[in-house]
Image (tube, rainbow, N blue to C red):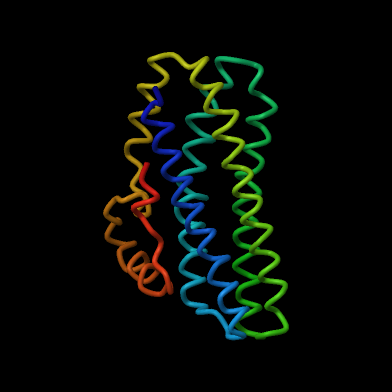
Length: 195
C-alpha cells in the first residue's frame, strides 16, 4: 500500500506534468494558427514551476526523502546523486527557459523556434526525472524505509500545499493561480490530477 509521502509526490508529479504539457499544447496551438502565444500565461506557468516544484517539492525530496534512503541502503547512492543533480540543474534550466521566453517575447518570431525547442527539452528532462523517481526510487523506498522513516516523511509531505493538487493557494499565490487558470485556452483538468 503506498504511503502518504509517495501519494503526495505522485499527485505533485501529475500536476506538474499537466502544467508542462499545457505549455507545449499552448505553444503548438499558436504555432499552427501562426499567432504569438499569451506571454503572460507562459510567464505565470514558468513562475509556478520555479516556485513550487523547483523550490518546494525538490527541496523536500533532496533534504528529507533521499537522505533517509541513503542511510538505509548504499545501493541508492548513484541513483539519488543523479536525481539530486537533476534538482540542481532543474532550477538553472527553468531560469534559462524563462530567459528564452523573454527573448521570444521581446524579439518576436525569430526567437519562437529557440523557445519551443528549449521548452520541449525542459519538459522531456522533467518527465524523465519524475519517471525515474516513481519507477526506481519509490519501489526502493517501500523495501528499505522503516515505519518511523515513513511517519516522519508523511508528516513533512502532508504539509505540502500545491494548488494544482487541489489545495487552496496560499494568499500570496491566489492571484497567480487564478491568472494561470483564466489565461489558458483549456484550463488544466485538476480532476485528472488528483489520484
